[in-house]
Length: 366
Image (cartoon, rainbow, N blue to C red; front, side):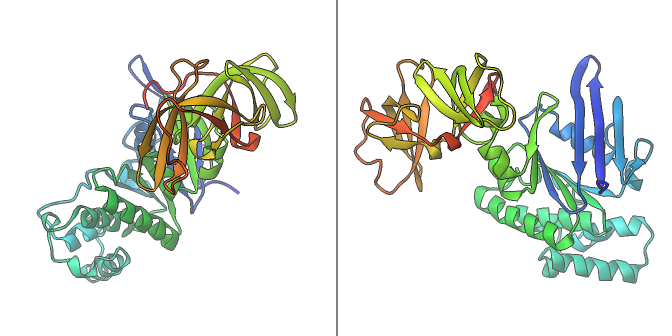
């Protein structure tokens, strides 16, 4: 099936600075796609290219098989919701929402009907006569969404629209956004640097770094089976233990590390034995054991125990892994009670919960 939107081998430069290289992204007609990456990764440039705010230096931008390169912003079947909402403060909420239809020359009666329908959809039916300054941040965000959907776009672009909201309101708006996208049945392309937000909202995530795509897939797939050190370290916390690939038996691999031989699971073809690799294990997949089985863990010394509300984070050091801080996440149910700094404990995990990665650079700061 032909995708709704296809970015084919897109490249972009600002002078001598490469911003994007070899970007290939497809968007289905009714999916919630998130482009996730740190500041400066190129994610916002991708959105601006789709919206028509930036030109491209190479590749093609195709919409249902049609090249959009020469199509101006106002003729693209997309609408954008910006981080700062971009509302007209001298207009009422109803006037803001109906503005797109007004500039298209639609009759007043039609505009009034459509505004009422859309305001009901976003839960603001009683707020049409107010001005943006009289609304909360979440309400202003809903006005921006209403203005984006009233002209019935085929795709909505969202540029970190929730970043200015507090934690509780942000969670509410995440639930609202996902529910709205399902009800409308249209594609959303969402830009964020927030990993938890991406996981909570998305049907599919594309991780970008340094102007290139690191990995893409369903949230659970990326979380459980990262393919690169960057994805493993950026998409949630991970213990990354460097070593050398010693043996391969199907998807199961043995890795020699300074802390001993460890088992891991590889997705797809394994690198050649002798290759520099990483064993990636999420903190919540690590168990506290008195004596881990060979290949399924190691022993380490407790460095710190931090209470995080519903969870406890235990940080540990291993003498053979200088500079590395191993992490174990446990429910705050008393199972970590009594642990003190300097205490030696055993750490273990299932080989199926340990991902094998080719060694490479991880983010400089997380």
